[in-house]
Image (cartoon, rainbow, N blue to C red):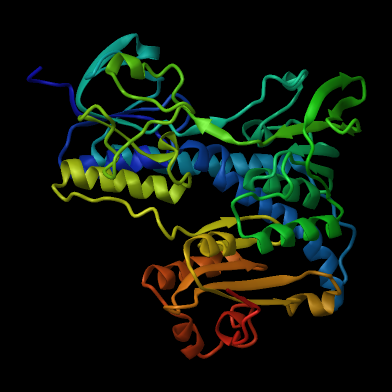
Amino acid sequence: MDKFDYDLFVIGGGSGGVRAARIAALYGARVGIAEEYRYGGTCVIRGCVPKKLFVYASEYSGAFEDAAGYGWRVGAAQFDWATLCANKDREITRLEGLYRRNLERAGVELFDTRAVLEGPHHIRLVARGASVTAKVILIATGSTPYVDNSVPGIEHTITSNEAFHLSAFPERVIVAGGGYIAVEFAGIFHGLGAEVTLVYRGEEILRGFDDDLRRGVHEAYEKKGIRVICNSVFSKIEKTADGLIGRLSDGSEIAADQILFAIGRRPFTEGLGLEAAGVAVAENGAIPVDAYSRTNVPHIYAVGDVTDRVNLTPVAIREGHAFADTVFGNRPTAVDHSTVASAVFSRPEIGTVGLSEAEARSQYDKVDIYRSRFRPLKDTLSGRDNQAMVKLVVDGESDRVLGCHILGPDAAELVQVLAIALKMGAKKADFDAAIAVHPTLAEELVTMREKVAES
């Protein structure tokens, strides 16, 4: 085919797809993009952004209590779920509008419809009942919550998608899962006033994170009154006149108004017509790609969670931009997926970058650990029994800092800056040479001198 309707057609209007479409258009490509729900994707519409707004809301209950230690007298606080949801919806609508306008200003043609592949260069726009052709196709459909349909009564549960749109605030909540989404929602609902139980199949929550962070959040949650049950799964869920009953594999029962399943996400590739275009798919539904996000079909690419590489919104954005630079900007760019910082907006917050202690010990012959645990200054007058932690994982031979892990206030903000240092190959001596900013949580990062462990 010599002539195509578009130089590039993007399937999926999330963060990665939008960035790729806009940059490609700015390079002069004729670009079309299709999104079946709302532009902005999971992160903006029903993920990172609304979740962080809910986290902010959940922190006020503790702030009101802490104020007394600082001389403030506040009246009885009242929380209104409907107000929070309405204000959140207004902000999400504003953000979606920005995404649309930025695409339109760049010259991208938008289609509000599901799009599926009909062949190597053909895309069917389902809602329009029409097809278009494209020289290059980018798949950026993201991921979707995994639901365990083997559990009897699973239809009575919700996922993180629905959690943002509940008509009434649930007074009793069970969260199934131990990953960052489950842990964050447990903290959110508890902070807003619900009785919360977190149920996880593994031995400890937050698998994949440094063990000190995992234990720290677990202990903090139990101090707050969040019940954490590990080594257990749901065997059955029943709907009653008073709500829901969750039956666990250990034989126990828990009553709840809502049960939120956050047991993982899966690449959203079902029904996309990938087989019609000859695109290979992994067993878990992910699309395998090379360093430049190219699939096994030379003119079809994929970025973001649908590739199941590093499933974070900023990574998808970087991949989308790199794709556009490579294919339309004549600037071949491969994304470096190492040393990617991330955060968990639990209570307390986690900021982490680089290798965990366990990962470092499996890869390096000599590993030094520096760790400091302390009570944040803000909690001294409030009387709250919170613990913060900072930890450095260091290559004992080269002195290079391999990992940095923070548990405490503003951990996410701190780790973004630390990611730059680790990316540049900073050594422990570089941290030691920096003069501390006092009094701060971050000063612990440059004042730790004694190893707490080495190998």
